[in-house]
View: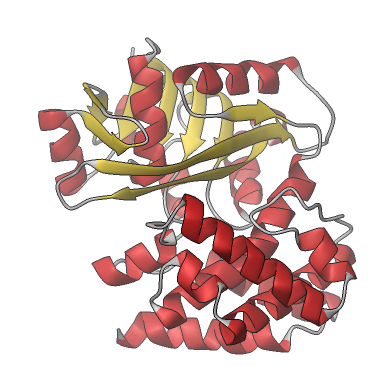
Length: 321
């Protein structure tokens, strides 16, 4: 029987960083991978550079049917094709599952696959880049948050977070994960669309006044959608999104530009994963993230004209790049 403590679906940058650190800490880890990436892992293991420098061997499965059970499933794939990937794991006995993907639709897919009682919410304020060599550049290690979808504290969320944190990837269990997921999404929506349209590093476009204005307006539109969905935003995100939705537009733009200066100082190499995907010719994460938000805004009759327009632009960029 094939069992592991942690199974990671998606050996890209963040999935590899998590898998490598957990394996180095002595946990049994299985990476679910395909094609060239699976060959890299089988031949060379996981190599991390940047904030940490080490190589560790890791068990790799190319056929999801071989996985019989796992204590914790971490979904770290890009959002396109997630439902099909999860369908291939419905046979497995999964103790807990959570997704560190972008967007706020991801939890619904996990619940559909494994049931409400086995799903945690999560978000990763952690960054890295998968290099052509197969090595992973670890660039930001702020916090990976996990928590119960229903809210409140739980021993199982604390246990998972403690294991990840002790391995070297900062992690915390929180009682308000849905609020934090939406707050990250309010930042990510603007970050993603500006990164793809400008092709610039994060600090560069955040400190440009016109790009910062667009980013601030996108945050405020997403904030209106969160409010209509019954979600209260927080400032615990890449941007102080709750404050940005409350103050004047001018002050919101200033908050973006100040955060951009912080990125330039503390993470000058940071590039959104969406920009990395664009440059590598990989599909962009659109329909399960921004497309979902546009559809929800229409359903709830929330005005989001900039988000809708830029969603069309990003779709066009994805098709014609």
